[in-house]
Length: 270
Ligand SMILES: Nc1ncnc2c1ncn2[C@@H]1O[C@H](COP(=O)(O)OP(=O)(O)OP(=O)(O)O)[C@@H](O)[C@H]1O
Ligand SMILES: Cc1ncc(COP(=O)(O)O)c(N)n1
Image (cartoon, rainbow, N blue to C red):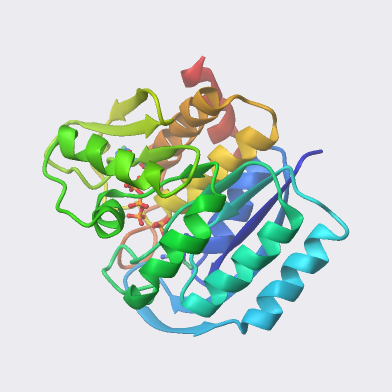
């Protein structure tokens, strides 16, 4: 069985972060592992408080995983602060895993900050260059690229700027472009642009979509799929997981991760 590691924050309400990542890994038939960077007291409608894990403990968790169970892919989610980013970058440079997928989490769905805005320079200089794929949503891409994204040309321009930061590919997620009937993501591999579209589902229950999507991509890469196929199948998975998302909690409910969701997603992708 392939092994996949998530380096991310803990969402005690189970919809996003490490919890979403591990559910996604199980649904993809890979062995999931976790390095927790921050403990977030949050639920479907608010973030109460976060406590960042000490950089030394982040490093030791990574050491514990890699010296014993080296993963075939690594997904990186919430990195709250500069010190945590540097700890992760240091250990990944040391262990050099394949298939690193980085979801540059900056805000929760309700707008609460999950990353110190002052650490964006460290994210760009020290973390992004490690990535085989970076998966920003539109607001995150705007912060990274440094300009407002208004149309498809802007999305492509931002993808090129982010690619220049040293990652192998960039997947621009279109979940936030709410004035269209489609949810379209655009992958840039440094040469070509590839489009992945699904019908836009009318639901408020999208807590954890970004976490789930990047984890599904990492699991697919670990299972040996080439990059475009990994994204295509992850797109089918997230679309089905949103279609069957759960109307629980007072805010944005979570996506659904039953094994049949993966099977259905795969069938839709084929
Ligand atoms: N309402 C929707 N219907 C269909 N697909 C969606 C919808 N919302 C998001 N998606 C898809 O879900 C995936 C995650 O994209 P999204 O932009 O929501 O990520 P994110 O912003 O990082 O997540 P979050 O907002 O939860 O932090 C993308 O493939 C996107 O196209
Ligand atoms: C610990 C943690 N990590 C990430 C997110 C964002 O989740 P998403 O972008 O998938 O909705 C979150 N709300 N909490």
